[in-house]
Length: 283
Image (tube, rainbow, N blue to C red; front, side, top):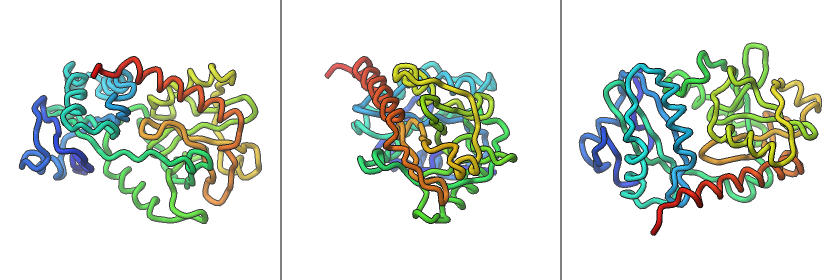
């Protein structure tokens, strides 16, 4: 099913095949119309003008494309040029590549406020098992299913994120994030082959070790949470780092107050700070 290359936009400039194009140009407008080609993409958080973990995102993009066509080596320079041209220090950078086009543009970023970080966010369940979870590809049917489920408010109000449940009812990942559970000093994540290998998740693994915790491969169901086998859960994603979960459907959690999550979050925040400091361009 056709889908636009650009479905959200901020800033005054985009990059099209290595050229800077104004957002009000006819060429930019055409990219917001449905497009038939298969589209591979990455969304990268921009902090203080730095595209966070850019190298990791480009490596994953190469894996998604899997040799179907060449991924230009100019993407890092084009990414930094676009960020500088728009002069927006905090946003999301979206890279979309097809067999014939490459389009880079900024989208508005939403970073949760202090209350959301401290108290956690509300999540719901979407029954969906992705056919090829390791490939980051735009699928209209998936986007439509997510939009329809987000439109249904739960007992604690609108959902911030949806957790995907497989055919066995096991919770694998978020619709736009990776999912973790904590029990004691063990941090559980789904097997690599079952999920999109998130860039933030990669660095969360390092933070787990730094915080003195242990990473365990494992899956849990909503019933496990309901029965109290799990009392802490959190999400990781490039646009918002780490967020504790306050509720899954009608089940309340107190994830934000778990000392293990706090230690892990602190270790991850340090990793992000070190990356920004080492990649910030001189004034």
